[in-house]
Image 1: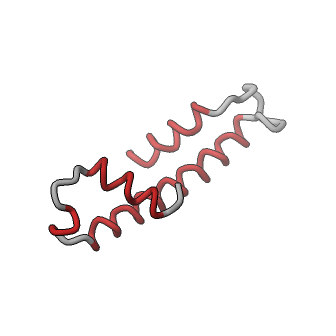
Image 2: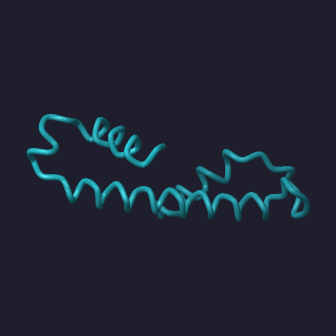
Length: 77
């Protein structure tokens, strides 16, 4: 259910022309949403692995949001 919610979030944020044909077609936008979803999944897994690799000393008093910013910086994002 969460996976479809993520895909729908990407799909509905992309403009489409309501048609099944063309560059802005609903079909093409759904395929693009699936790609976005895969990228988001890979990022989430990478961040989870990053968190898993940290010790409590590494984390200190940093919040998850602060750790996410550090992770993104390390990845060049």
